[in-house]
Amino acid sequence: MRQEWLEYLQRLSWNAPMTLALASAAVGSVVTLAWISARDARERRRQRRDTALELALSLESYARTCRTMMHKAVWAAAEPVGPISREASKGVSIPAFAYPDKLQWHVLSRRVISELREYPATVHAAREYVEAFGEFGEPMDLCGQVEYECAKAAMSALALARTTRRRHGAATWKPGAKDSAMERELSDFIATVEEKRKASLQRRAESTLGRRADAQPFKQPLSA
Image (cartoon, rainbow, N blue to C red):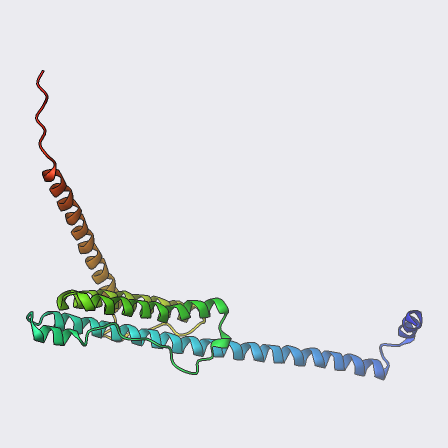
C-alpha cells in the first residue's frame, strides 16, 4: 500500500487542479490557525493587563487607607491619658484588606497568584497581632504599634502593586500630589521607628548588665 501511494504521488502533477486545491486548502488552514492563535494570545495579554491593573489599583488604594489610619493613630495618641484616650484608641486598628470580587485570576500564572494571595494573609496576621497587643498594652503604645504596622503594610502593598504592573505591562502608577512622596515618607518612618527600637533594646541590655554587675558580691582579696 505504501509503495502504491508513493507511485501515485510521483505521477501526480503539481499543476493539476486537485493538487492546487489541496495546497490552497492547506495554506488557508495554516493561516487561519495562526490568526486564531495570535488573536487568542492578544486577548490573554489584554485580560492579564486588565486584571493586573485592578489588582494594583486595589493595593494602592489600601496603602492610602493605611496612611490615613496612621494619622488617626497619631491623633488618638495625642489625647490625654484617661477614658477619652482609651475611647479614641478603640477606632485605631490595621484596616482589613481584600481584593475586588470577580477578578479573572485564571489568566495569571500560579506563581503570581501565590504571591498576590499571600498579601491578605499577611495583613490578617498583623491585625491579629495588634488586636492581641491592644488587650494588654496602653493606648499610646497601641497607637504607636498600629502606626508602625500600617506603614509596613502600606509599603508592602505599594511594592507588590509596582511589581504587578511591571510584570503584566500595565500602566505605571502616577500618584497625585498628595501621594507623590508617600513611599519615601513611609520608608523614612519605618527606618526611624526601627532605629529607635534598636537603641531602646540596646539601652535595656546595657541596664540589665549593669544591674547584674552591681548585684555581684564584693570579694576581699586573700591575704598573703
